[in-house]
Length: 279
Image (cartoon, rainbow, N blue to C red; front, side, top):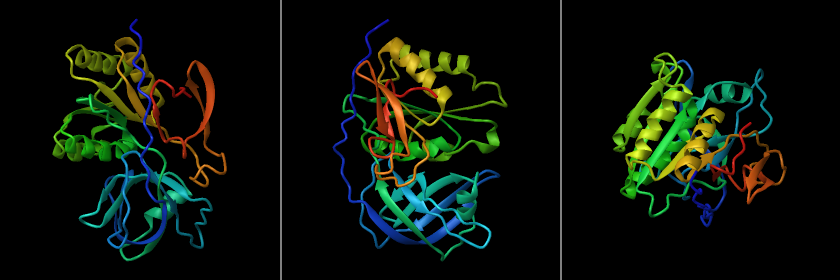
């Protein structure tokens, strides 16, 4: 086994955190599971890093009273259009409340928060591996990869073809898109290992990026150790404040041969892929 490359994430990016009340431009259902929320931020001036998130104050009603803000990865920030976009899956009270927003409503958001992805200068061939709504976190990374002239392969996974997300966005950004699904029988661990291993051997991968999935994390950790390929993962975690004060999102990591504890909202949500511990 080769020694793994050490590639500490250089979190020097800083951006002013703003609490903003934004008008809803649209809030549409993309399929049976996912919604796209677009906010008007034409009057705001902020910079986002791929992998960062906002804490959304979900609206309350007679039947829905979500208390805590909901952390949500940035799906897209387009200053030229004055848009801030979030892709979300309706799963609980907070996201049900978000799904009821209509054009012209207002939503309070706090951000951008956390530390995002970093593309090293010598990483010319990037590989994204993600599943479901986890792909939303990686679209801004694909945008930055194109701006920097990097080659990008996006392996997009889902239960079935009808819920595959972000395929067209990745294609429009020049990525080589490979779609795999449970229904088609090509999204299992063995198939993904074989697929990615072949790309590494062919010199098509300098770094990995993923989000959320425990199964995908294990695959990339194993391949990363085998071939000395570095990588980064954006972790999902329950949060309260999103600012690092409440300690709600603390997780365990392997750092320098020891178990350490870090706040996902503050030290992350993006971490070195080999430091993250499977759950």
